[in-house]
View (cartoon, rainbow, N blue to C red):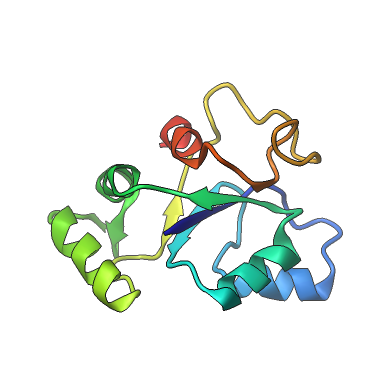
Length: 134
C-alpha cells in the first residue's frame, strides 16, 4: 500500500499535473490518500512527484490512520478491521478515501526540495511522517 500526501499548493500548476492531482483526489495540501501499488499509479506519481510526498506504509499505520482520521460521511469509523479487509480484497474504500491531516509536528523541512533534504518525492519513513500528521 502506498500513501500519498499533497505537500504543495496550486499556484503555477501545469494542466497535466493539476489533472493528475485531481484524479488522485489530492485537492488541498495535507490531504492523504492510500492506494494499492500498481503500474498506473507509479506513472501518475512520476508526473506529480514535485508536489507530493509518497511511500509505502504498513498495516499498523493504516489502522491508526483509519481510526483517527477516517470518516463515513460526517461520522467516524467504528469497525476498522472491516474497512481494512474490504480495501485489501477489492482495492476500494467503503469510507471517504481522502484523509484530511494536520501539518506535521515540527514542520516540513522544505516544500521545494526532494527527500531527504526536503519533503517531496519518495520517502522511506512514510510511517513516521503520517504519525506526525495525525
